[in-house]
Length: 492
Ligand SMILES: [Zn+2]
Image (cartoon, rainbow, N blue to C red; front, top):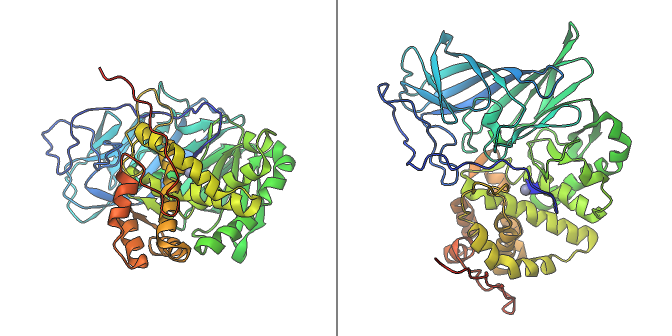
């Protein structure tokens, strides 16, 4: 994700729900249903224990009115990792009509933002189970709860990061549980639906069309994209015959084309830096909506239209933002953060390639940008926490966990690392990282381990200081760089 400069940021913030510790483990049927989580430090109630989702089949029916709840059927195939008397899914902001587990009706109730399902018979450990939920999905945001569906001038798009996929469909809403997706959308005539992956079918009957898409790689729920609108889909070819498809409002096609035409060369540039593009397709989704951010939804990044149509943005800036979202396809999408505290690995790398592209293509000095980041770094750490331990989202703060500490503050860590181990090892690290964790999830400890291995020495002290220190360590090679201390506020 990247917040637009100078805009109000309508991000939903996670209310700090229950202060109590999250219980993880076998749930006795007699205990009252409660919201569970996988123990994420920043979002304690995201995800659920006891199973691992292998695939989602999402079917939505759109009425043509983006204020009316969509009808939906979500089918989940999962592998149980423990015996389950009950099973939780994350789901809020829709009405559940029925739940079936392995073909039999199951009891269900909603607690917090969890849908708690009680199957007729307990699910044994190490077995496949299929859960089918018939529900609605409300595109109108709740109070203090942005995210999920975004209403555009001509339909809907998705923006689920970090914790809003479960406002759209029932799921195990945590990036540690990636799965395959099939997405079907039925629309009235005149609308086009596009989702992650490649199309597998278009079925027209009785005035409606059902558009089916399937991913060829596992995906985190936060990266789901569904675009419904009066859209044009533009096709072009990227490096190695990669199919590139852009989705734009039909009336804006000509104005956007000069920007869209740059994608293949941007992909080639990223491939020259880190290796082959990791997915089956890529493209730019342009939404007529005031989102306040761009988002790296897998294989189809979401951009707000004004980034391309507002003359206030210089050309080099717009292109570098396109590269930011593109580079997330490697960093964040193909290699997903295991926990939300690993967010710096996604945003730091996306910011790094954004800045490197601006340097190589438009002479915007990376070193000057990093020196400015160094100067602000102590204040960013004070406000948002060190890059490796970001502070939880705060009620009333729309940016959530997406603060400067994990953007330029984390790119600064990568710059320091390159200073420390040299350009050659740094570039080898980057290529090896995306290759060895492709289609998986990875942690900060994994990155430290690989960096140490490639540099041929233990870098744990370096990372400890740079990722977890309250103060920014001295910059290798630039002992003169200074960080401005945070303004001390009077203590009560
Ligand atoms: Zn980003």
